Image 1: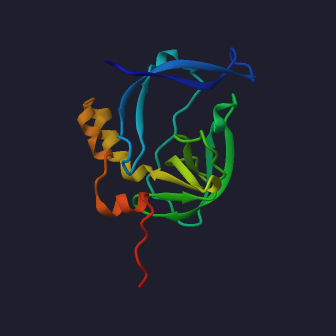
Image 2 (image 1 turned 30 degrees about the horizontal axis):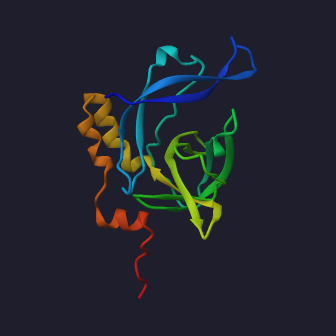
Length: 186
């Protein structure tokens, strides 16, 4: 059976400057299984029912670099009707993971990591660090768009869900990075 998810987003009120909240149903096309390196879900929203003033983000052509200024957006704790937007830097960029210093709270997963200078989409927030019941909101991880761009592009071209199977990354180095198994420096 088809799974649907309610997507909530800000919208303009009849073209006025004030914002209100709208929601639409989205079709859940794909999601990675629990325990996979990338925690990704792909949703399809009917653009005919969305606010026409919303614009899509361009996926970056150039990969993120260490120290690069970025912006994160999300809906922490699911309590806000408007997104929380924070600035930070890429503290570590690799082919399979971006770590940023943006303040990311629980509930912001799925939000974008955007290049501050161009507005291009660099990654998707998937988690922050929690240890011994302590949350570290300025240590968080994102899936780099460079790592998943090809699979999403293939799906858009073919409409075949099988194209998204590459999002279930089984490479040992990727799994180790996401499970925080750091390589020995000895």
